[in-house]
Length: 434
Image (tube, rainbow, N blue to C red; front, top):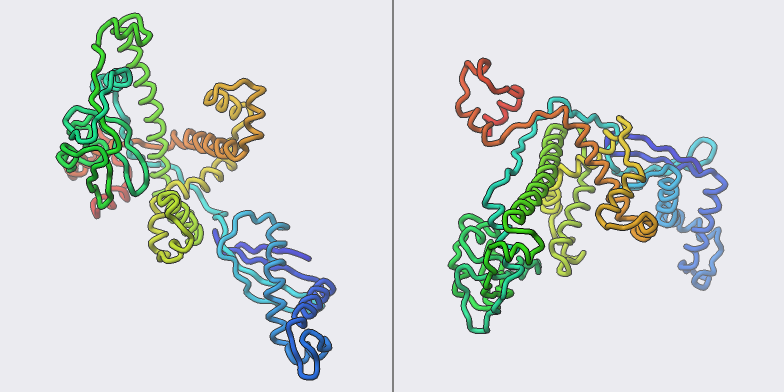
């Protein structure tokens, strides 16, 4: 057999599997013999009619039966021989007899995009980093004190009060919001600014309330007697005194903020890149359907079934997938940028990352990598993506989204003399239309 792949565009492919005359004839005869077992011709028992009579009377049906039996086999062989890994919506188009008697089987299918251009020059990225505040220190210290507090669990008939601690379960997803202090500020963190805390105050254990059409249940509640915040408590917690404890906690918060800012910055870069390259990189609808179904299954958990997904309209599933479109686009783009610019992740870097995360010795790392190959592959993809973001950073102009809005509202004909930079005309025009 011979195999040929024709790239129609970024995502559409045509594959021709050429089956030589001898191989085709053998497979065809196998199909005829198998078909004949189910045929009954007058004067013969079922499955006992002469092959010549079966061929004469059922030529068209035999041809269809052969296609049903072997078209898929030839297609899969073609995929293996041409190293086509990802395939969506494969379709058998036709089979054509050549002049020398060979048969060409023609297929079309969708695959991951190839041959696209990644444009990351002059990338405008809206990003505002999180900044340290004394409130963060206060909240963190209170959490630490709560974890070391004496807790008085609620009795069955006791109702919730302000400043007590509560955990809440989402009955739709099964997710639990862990213990938090029942205050106006905290409730708005977990729900939204318009949420009325009085929906919770006065409820009992197992009591329920509705938020965004989803029922939530009071999972547990307690009153906490916190230890005093002084040098003695600091020593119990492993610090020489209270000031040293505060300084240590502050450093931890700043490190966590730095890590979060890097993640948030990377997401902002990816989003800006995907927006700029939305027309450059095509994603097949079949791929979006696959992504959407996977996310629905994760969200619904045990409640999700294939039968339920079959009843959902494709456009609904695609809209869900499109929420993740920036990352989908970036997945393909980052691989191409890495290949074009020789960006790689070495085994040493992977080992260092695993060792840092899992605190394992080198001899244990190899055992871990053998036991969890999928995790290692995923980690490598993540590290490569982060490296590509670092590569793209010099091409980015970062702007504060809030300041950008102010600039638009105050822009005049003399903006060329202003002390801020106009990114480009297209960006300004698009924002005005919005």
